Length: 225
Image (cartoon, rainbow, N blue to C red; front, side, top):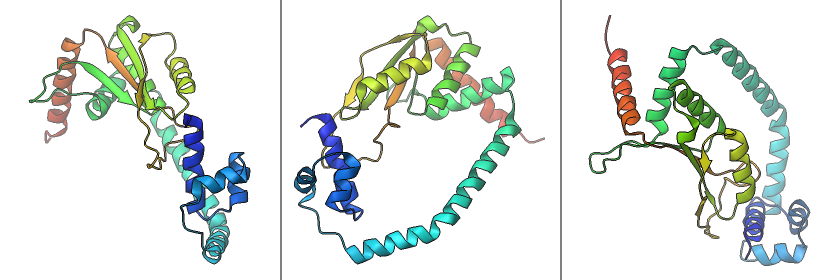
């Protein structure tokens, strides 16, 4: 079974479990009704009355959901305006905290003093790369590779990340996660681009400095006046 077909089958099963009819599923996915029947035939028949009641309840709550979403956006924009342009020191400290939260760290049982950062959030990647530039890390020392489920659109993800980071570093071979057809994944669709791994070559000294900077932040934050 092709990756695309596997994704369609998984989505069809999700929709069926949500109470959708064969016709509705076929129309949404752009496949034949017979294919839908084959993919979901082992699932229990949806309770039509319950599904109808659910739709009616959703319709009643829709105005409230829209109002809440509008309020979320207003709050987010207001908070965004409170930050403004970061100073070098602010970016310096933010980058240290970001790396120590999300970056690879050496362990007592596995010493590995390498600066490696993995994340699926493009904004996280942008902030991290801005921080590396602030530290004077040349782009030629950066190595990237994508980590993604094999059932996803791998080529599109590779293109997205390459365009996102721009002309810095080099991209290595993509790592594919094996797909389990029994698992109904939520991270699907156009928004799923896997994770991007960013490695800094020759980074043992930088790693030690990051660890020291983090210790300094912790010490500074815990001192009383």
